[in-house]
Length: 168
Image (cartoon, rainbow, N blue to C red; front, side, top):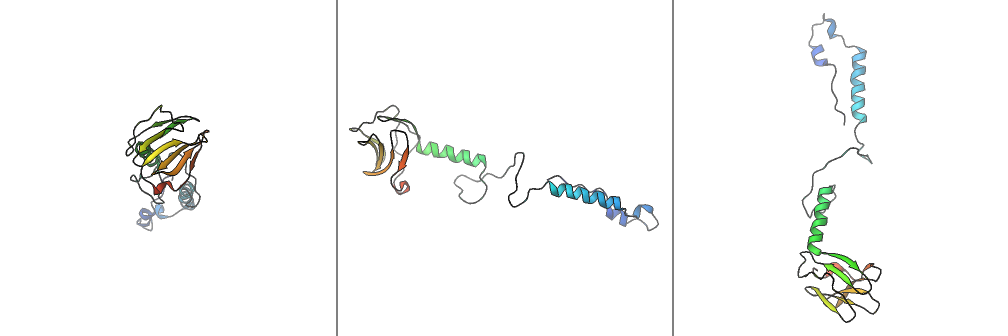
């Protein structure tokens, strides 16, 4: 918002003696004040569907906050970094192999460059395994139950409710 600066001190005029010509309030003074107010009001953002300009700022919520407050870029960057360091990343996948780079995930070890075939079962975390099925899909299982798969085109499909299983 453009700052409003009062041009005329009406209180000072009011305290002048009645015989002082400066006590008279002129239409031009009112006009100047109303124009200054209008300029300040016009530069405010509407509360309904208002568009901000420049670089608006907001307070950054603490990690893990889950409510309707505005998420700053700092909050999102921290959340993505934390998720990456907790769960690791899948780097590449083709019909016969997958490269897994482990972060600090519970029980996960680095498996970069490991080839997964139909006869290979990889332990990727406590209770978690990765196997290739007969259709060249890489299937992630938890305690023997299929949870997710990556097909030969690299598409990830969640088979079950992944949140019901342990941490990979």
